[in-house]
Length: 180
Image (cartoon, rainbow, N blue to C red; front, side):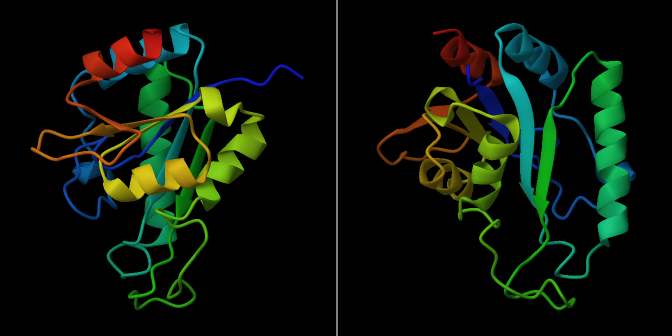
């Protein structure tokens, strides 16, 4: 079987501006330049998947139904812009939450690799040829633990990246890496 490569994306801070617990359509603002970036990644042969921690559910900031509405809005807008997303996975659990049954640790919660491993399995991916783009070290931890070959940390802050993690400042920089 010829396994495909994918661009695995965090949601808040990569797909949309991270306003803190984005649980309504009104708070969901796409990142500037996202649509042409994702179309270009697709043109380069990458499947697209979004893997997101959504502890706002466990913390009681919004419900699973609210998350579903936001996700439907996001996917519809992406589709209108010519971007097809192959898979969306979310983890609602958090050990410091207050809403049962989400008050727990989860193998899916980044930096644990559960969502990454599930995306690799469901999409039949070649993990080593795949790329994870996230805006936090927990994203990088999940990607590394899940065997993803390239980890790109999207940040504007002055940080030092651990070995095997590449800091990128823009979607244009990501495309250069994807094209290499």
